[in-house]
Length: 217
Image (tube, rainbow, N blue to C red; front, side, top):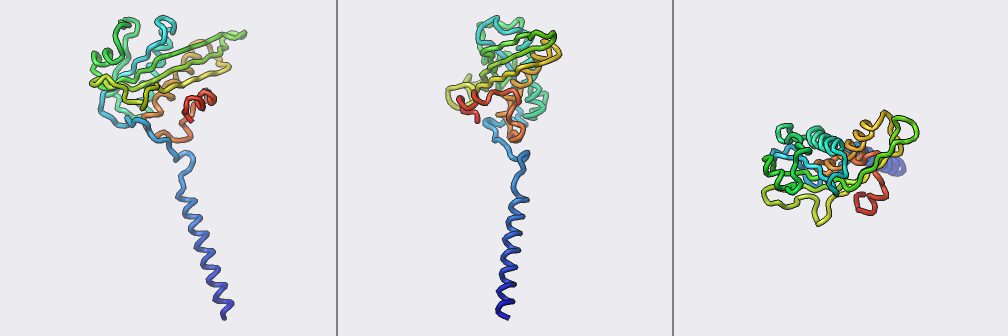
């Protein structure tokens, strides 16, 4: 009888252990459910947000690239960050902007509370031997500005948030290549403004070595 009792106790212990492991496994988040916490949460904000895309050297960045980056950052604020469309201000008239004004001044004039300031530090686009095939890259730095105080509210510290994207080949011409770079910038800038699913955080054209140097891993 004693042997039967020991066997029954052992069976109950094994069942409990397996059950706990199973519950723990089922409760653990899947890779898609794991999220990278927002560094500055803008989800459902009612602050008026404006996007301003600047350039490191005046006249060195094509206007159509600045416009497309502006478009994709605003689209990501609406679709991914989920800011209501009425709080994301329309695109600026970059062709008529006065360069003497700062991003904060431009934001105040537009009625914005916050300015997502993205400046393009470098940009390369080369046509390959085959017609319609391009190789390209872009590097940007971004901050979030409060127009009332004129201060940077994101990221913390003195440095702007960098992003570097490159691709070896893109078909369908220059416009498609510009769109690809702009889409990457739009994601890489806005992913810090909401709890981004872990599987969606990285962008395919990102340079991982650059990320390690600047601490974006």
